[in-house]
Image (cartoon, rainbow, N blue to C red; front, side, top):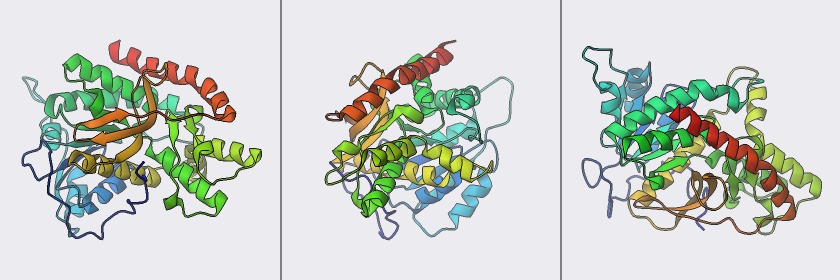
Length: 351
């Protein structure tokens, strides 16, 4: 299994991307286009910066309801090959027509990353965010269905457990749903688990690759620490590491004291996920990373587990191995919550 982080200490030191064997569907066989929807937000700006630095990306489109021309202009001064677009929603017209700004951002995209929405504040659960962010994701995915139906969609907007099912329903209604091209980004859960295990065991976290399954909220996040070779945890350490991984977002929200949520670490995680997808799309083999996708591994229609990515997106949803009794107890506890959150998204999309 490919180490998720070991090769991704942001390879800005590389002078050129490998261009041979690309199979993107964008305008030319050798170019990759990425759009960030919600590009002026706390996640969107650092995510866009990291994407501008990536040798995997030839064109980067930043879209948001305000500020994107400035963000794109700012990023355009960074001396990398990635060209920039900053697009805003087009003004209302009569007769009604498609959002030209969104069309410009999305047309020809290979990957669309969606961090758009409002952030969590102290005392707020991911569920509290639901109505606002659900509407935003629904609208943006309708645009994706129209302008880039073949792109891989990477959903960051919380609550991911519900927003990914919303996206699936929108794409189904448009007749363009492909489960291999729709992912919820759970990479931050893996980053946190790797970081915490590294600190616990005295290891370099880049050498750690924890499998994290389930969903992307609270107890639906299940790190499989029993599968980390060579690690030794007391029962107390195991409980503390598990809960800290599940509620790492709360730790950041509280530390920022109302000034934001986990934006920088989420931007990094979103970038790692996006770059891995692009590497797989251009034909690199052995790309395996955890993602929240349509799945038949459990009774939940969507589930996060290791996935093998290839030229067509998610080419195989992999199993997650044997659970320890401790993990099995968490698994049984999380499944009703996860299924309820999935159904909430489906119901919203179909109301």
